[in-house]
Structures are given as C-alpha cells and as structure tokens.
Amino acid sequence: MLETRRGRFVGITLAILVVALPLTVLVAPPDPYTQLVVAVGVVLFALTAANLLSHPTVYERLREE
Image (cartoon, rainbow, N blue to C red; front, side):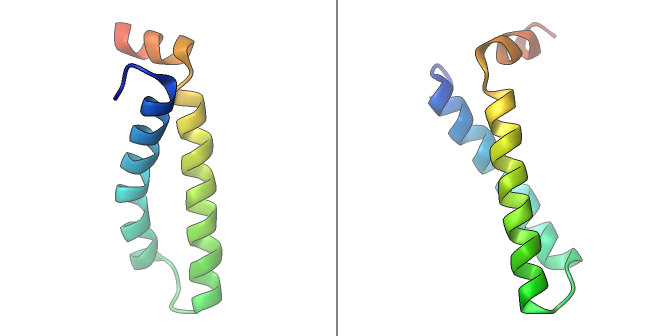
C-alpha cells in the first residue's frame, strides 16, 4: 500500500485522523457547532499534511533519515 503515492496519502491521512479526532473531542468545548468547526479543521489539516508528506521527494527524504 505504501508503494504508490495514493497509498501513502491514505495511510498518512488515516493515521493522523485516528490520533487527532479523539483528541479534538476531548479538547473542544461541548458546543456542537464548535466541535464541528474544530473537526473540519483537523480533517483539512490532515489532508494537507498527508498531501505534503506523501510527495515522492519528501517521502524518500524521510525514509533516508
């Protein structure tokens, strides 16, 4: 699954979301609208970070270190 960029993207996104979404439930205020805004922000951050980290150049550099 990690051989293709799409596979790396999906794997990184899921890893970030599995860790971050439960933490947002604990940290966000109990207001449902605020929780929704925070959750959407976390998802957007996860997609952006996964897009950058799954790039072939960045991925190869991370594997070297």
